[in-house]
Length: 257
Length: 353
Image (tube, rainbow over all chains, first blue to last red; front, side, top):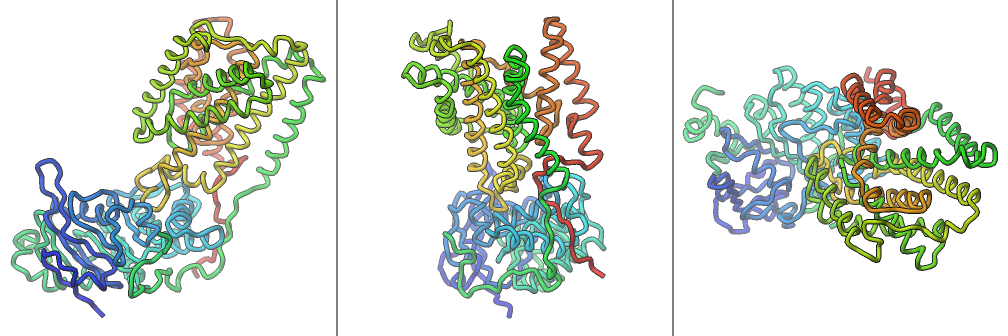
């Protein structure tokens, strides 16, 4: 069931035909700093891809470009074969692209339930009962149902991370972009979150997950890519990546397993 | 682009797995307290409407000021407390409303009938001015909105047809029987308050309210879940401006005269900030309480001149330090009260065994 769509830096269309999400030759520069230099990636429907790489490799920038938070200097983003490079973030969400933020950004004045409800109403385009149901379902899925009426500003870090996930799920995404959702959590907390993400993936959601915590990542993804210095250094299975010499040198340093 | 999920082959729908809500979730948007509050408010409006017959127009005259203060506070709170747009320039729309009413009056339209047109003029101006302000947020937005108001002030002072710096009078109303004019003014001011506060409340309860409460707190995340952030901000700004236009029209009607230095005055913004912060930013009840406090302080202490301002300042500092959520925010936060709910409370749900 794993469709490994490997791509080199060339700009042929092959490999993106059946991809739900495709990144094509994306370049991004901040001042004199080249953050991304010709990154391409095609993700078939239903796949879970882990994106790893050292700090400053461009992972979060790539995710932000895919989500529509930033327009790349060059390159295209395709969602379901449609070029969405010029489509703003909100409309990409309505097209089925959900995201979480690395530093949680709850709506502080809203309750936990209302946070998910905004996403169900605006992201998934639902009304009234249907929206309530999806929003509450997202809270149940992420273990936040008991906190439904709590103002989001009162949440702990773990709960904020869960709310990020709940809000993204309430938009009913077909592609879910996760940005270091396990960062800063204890091991049992990470395991609980991994369980939730696994069930989301099992329900058919395509996942692109930027993460440093390999233990969490390897429990979910079938495919791992490594970014280093703005380039795609590796693309393969997580097991292969952990053995890869280039990846170890650039990122793992031979100590992390 | 209306399709939800693009692409072939269509991915399986991303439904929450079976663990998700099978029993329908009950969501409550109202309460007994809210029924009682709205009933009391309706009775209060009726009693206030009867006041000119009962206590005479001499005593109702100051009430016009109270109504307009409360309306201004409600609108400013709609912008700052819900949509996250702190503005020091809403006096621009007071001025536009007042001068629009003057021009409409010169064109032969009855001042009371012209109030909706003055509100519309302010809304149209706001839609244009928003194009300048829309990229700004926070303190930059606040200062830029003030600059816009100052520019309008300077423009009007140089324009002879608008009376220049000396201002303009409303001659049509001067010929009315004073007691009738005062009663009409009172009722219209009451209507403006009901529309601004009541309309604002309904707006915050609507889906636009959900959008604006999300946008005000976290615009980036709001955009990421699909909220049209700029459209939400523009709608809040334009609707608030319409209300300020109506209030500005009432300022010239109640005073029979307006001059640019008094109507384009940042003191209005300071008063709005004071009322909303004292009462409770981002609550429906707070601005009304803040308006009562400011009005009472004006009536009782305004004769002490500078000391009045010192007292107002000290009160503001005390509230910000001791009750940062405002007086109503402190009470409602501690007791979980909401007389006029705007949110969505989950009432019952299936408990996991």
